[in-house]
Length: 327
Image (cartoon, rainbow, N blue to C red; front, side):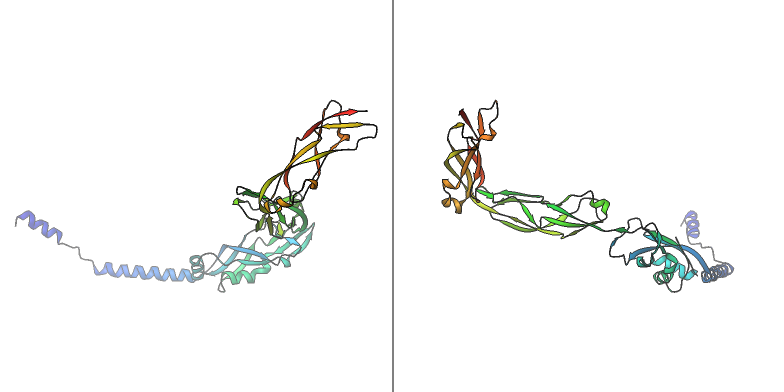
């Protein structure tokens, strides 16, 4: 072994011995720190904490105000141990503020004294903690009265029928009107509400389903009764029908002779397959009204004044007829 290796080995194996005095001093220092901490935590301190609040017992004819604070501050007094545990455990439980205890201060405003709820706050933060004061000491409440308004329900529904099928009627909901309840300023802006949006594709049968009524955005204070409506959509298989029928001229003075060209029209319509065999030309009546004669016009509109209830998408060919007047 060389002298250099021997020197390195001596250096790596060498440890500075710890003096007994240093060990005793370190232990004493730690003990002193522990006793100091225990002494400090045993003392009482006053601190301010934030406590969440909830509101209950709202009068039945009133709405919950939107500007109420969601928390209060409180000065609390307790030992350092207790406060440290409170800090480590997280937020205190919510304190219930009883709105029925609010007293009127005039002009439709009410005052709720928070310090009257100290015992509830005491329960929320712990029995070993004393509540000294709550801020703010008063919460002012302006209750808003509820009004009612009857509005129409508009279905936001699209029905796409399968080939050969048609809607038997327009999409309707029942009831057609619902009652809104809430602050009058909000109700004044709403004249109708809509249902949830739905699309039905390739429909070949009638539909019956419930739809939720949706409030316009930003109107969470309103309530709807009923909140659901029923939608009934009649869907059936339809076929096309066509009849040629006479055109009747009406409201012609006795001194006037009016003749139309042509004097017959075709009625073209759609009807459920099961009702087609019952259709007859005499179930339809087409007229041209003399009172609709206007200077400069040489034709009159054809109007259908009678048709079977089952018929849909009815039209006439032609839609207008020429005429001559002989007096």
